[in-house]
Image (cartoon, rainbow, N blue to C red):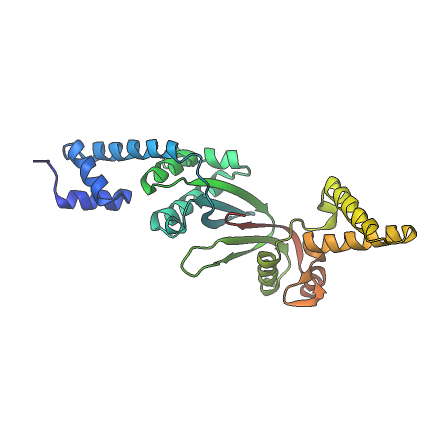
Length: 275
């Protein structure tokens, strides 16, 4: 008879989040040795990780951690929404973002190498993925530095953790307006703060496209430069935050909203799970 009790099974399941059958079988194989059973379950999960390497991770959550002078925003991805709301997965995200912030990581490689409990973030994720039974990956990291911050986490489904995360770095004293701008960003998805930040290659490509469209519409040659610049202006209103129409009042631009509130935005980040 195996040298373990039902209480041992319960303790090990609570510790690792593993299924009843797998936990019991591991204890049987380990002859009741808890630490050996942990090793067996981890090795079994590690083999599963290799098989899951090519799977897509379109679900997950976003998490943020503020420290002195910076906010760290991460996207932790998994395969299914069932795992996305799993307590162990949510707890893993908390551990990861804490470790990333403590390390001051500014790149994904630095984040994965950050230390957590005597191992790297990458190894911790791999260990937890083995137990969870799905592919799990730290997909993105953004470090936003600034004076003051507004962090907005949006749930696209009330049963799931936040799947859209926004961080806004700003100066000024109107926190309510800063939050409204963060909410706008979650909806409008700007790619840049100003039009000057849009890469020249991107602008020239857009210019070429709108010029071809305008010619195809039979616009007069003499009018093309003005038409093209007008359409480029519309492009900048889509991608540059300060030029976007405010989601709550499209008669105002974000630049006007910030000016009225006495705010200056120095940077922002927006992550949406799977996007």
